Figure 1 (cartoon, helix red, strand yellow):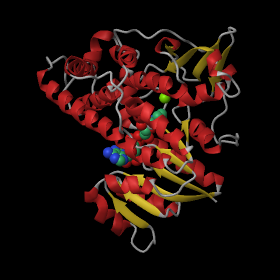
Figure 2 (tube, protein in one colour):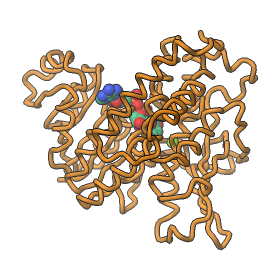
Figure 3 (cartoon, rainbow, N blue to C red):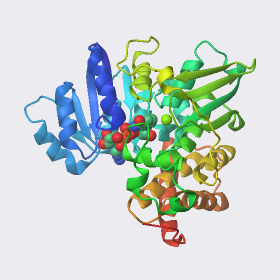
Figure 4 (cartoon, protein in one colour):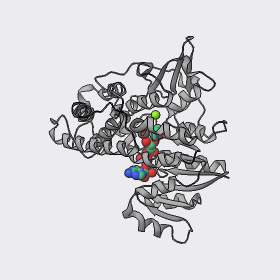
Length: 393
Ligand code: NAD
Ligand code: MG
């Protein structure tokens, strides 16, 4: 039996992962983690006969314990319990917690020397170099789960990365892509929380509308594949059927196509290095009829350009960028700032670090990254009050 754990099991990626694990029928589920949705976590733990269920929140411990009473499933709660659970022997671990909270459990899982299927892009953006060094130290493999990165990874099988000229990540343009520019400042979290093609968690859906998600993915691609910033390009592709393209030095371009369903990249990581049948819709190009592409408008998507600024700075800039983005998203969801203020807030936070800190120095430890993350959130929160109101809801 293959031993597998899923962190962020109650989320959109987590649920899809468990669906595929159950279909394989050859996996022993070690640990499942969730947040405040304790009833769903307990249900999943029972259905998949997990050895251990962990809620990230100490105050939910008693509720989870009572929901799993008599099941024989071990129960734990809190950040330290998540790390302990990730340290338990497993061959395959899914990292699908949303946000920087996924960083430490992912790190701990690498010490098993198995496969870390990484949906949590925040880990690579905040601590890419450290994460890769930890994987190398333990002989662990990090596999991409983000659909675009899985697409690039698949296009690179058997190829020499030195022969790559350019990687193109596609973007749907998000839920507000057809809105008139002058209305964007007044978009609400409900408006931005609609996605035209993908069913995902609320936070990544809003990040898709602002293209903060794509900015994260550009940095993620640089880290995963060791690309120079100038080798990465983003194109808006409203149909979301082409997930990424890799251009080689002989002029050939390999594109990865498929229906927009996260069970494809999750399943690829689960079955890797083989391919196994997956319950995803088959691509019907005759029915799709057309594939459109265009360059993103920097005025509509001010967040996207910040990715190149962060990559040029290097060092801790990724950790500052991610933490400030999470703080900006919280402020937007909480009604404190407007949709377009998110990019301004992140830009101002990056500036504040550029003025006063040695931001371009590589962080030496995970602890240092977490300190930077905390400080960036503190500064971003302080800047929320100072931001001239621009269409806040
Ligand atoms: P989601 O919001 O649906 O689920 C998040 C999961 O993390 C839940 O299990 C939740 O309980 C848990 N969680 C939330 N806050 C936590 C905390 N502080 N500590 C511990 N656990 C916590 O999110 P999602 O859409 O499944 O995304 C998960 C990750 O995968 C994100 O990093 C996202 O960027 C990435 N991703 C998602 C998709 C997608 O299609 N949903 C695609 C590509 C990448
Ligand atoms: Mg993606």
